[in-house]
Length: 293
Ligand SMILES: *[C@@H]1O[C@H](CO)[C@@H](O)[C@H](O)[C@H]1NC(C)=O
Ligand SMILES: *[C@@H]1O[C@H](CO)[C@@H](O)[C@H](O)[C@H]1NC(C)=O
Ligand SMILES: *[C@@H]1O[C@H](CO)[C@@H](O)[C@H](O)[C@H]1NC(C)=O
Ligand SMILES: *[C@@H]1O[C@H](CO)[C@@H](O)[C@H](O)[C@H]1NC(C)=O
Ligand SMILES: *[C@@H]1O[C@H](CO)[C@@H](O)[C@H](O)[C@H]1NC(C)=O
Image 1 (cartoon, rainbow, N blue to C red):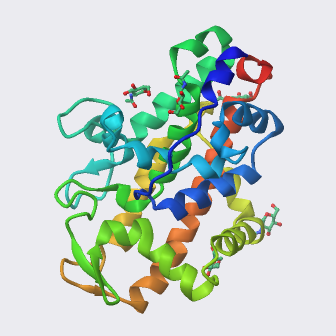
Image 2: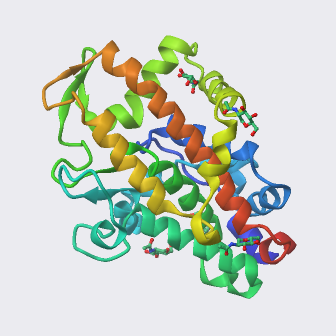
């Protein structure tokens, strides 16, 4: 289709953080393994040229453009602020931006981009309404973000962003620890500084240890295509149990915190990947719309 040719425009790739570039890459790389043939075909049609057929390579795109003037509206879509110390999440109460605009949060965005891709797949003529390349990149990114526990954190500390801590010797904040530092330290300590080795270790756990759990990870009640409310509830619960715990302002986080939290991070990356694939597989089930193009 002509439209698809127009979509194939290279993207600039500066570096800004989300889960962190590595976390998003891992989630999408894991998802790639679980894509059905139909989904893989549709995804390949939608990817920009610069991706060279690799979804994972564009999964940080929403972080790269979020402070760009034309995309500033997307900034609130990366997270959810929940009431301080409540340790729970409710869509109606919590999914809004700081001005109170409803649906402007990460779960709202997952619904939005799932719906856009579904509509386009069901009815090729609706393709023109949305940029589906962007819809795919946003969806893939936000499914990653909603699995980062502190992307569903407290309002008062902006998901840990205002909690200053030391990570070993380095001064940083708690949100950044969960986006980047845990993964960074794990790469150095356990994975030869090689992200693909870490991803392989997670994939091995998926097939050896978590295999029986993956169908419940993927499952959405009522046959919904995506169920981000569930992922967000898990995240705030993990944030309270593990992220905020023993990480008060000014504390120094070292081996004890790192080694006990790393398995949580690795499991969340696994769940994000498995669920992203399940969502894309459900969106692109029938060979209609995009898949026909
Ligand atoms: C769709 O979005 C991509 C990424 O922002 C952009 O490169 C492309 O030009 C857009 N396509 C159309 C038809 O606007
Ligand atoms: C839905 O997607 C469109 C297109 O990217 C965007 O303009 C709109 O702000 C999005 N809304 C939400 C709630 O994500
Ligand atoms: C794999 O699972 C084991 C057992 O639950 C856990 O200790 C380990 O950290 C996991 N590794 C990865 C890479 O997920
Ligand atoms: C996984 O499921 C199989 C078949 O239902 C069962 O035999 C096996 O014990 C389960 N493994 C674990 C680790 O729960
Ligand atoms: C979900 O879909 C399956 C297969 O299409 C169908 O058999 C089942 O009844 C549906 N369940 C609900 C709750 O709609």
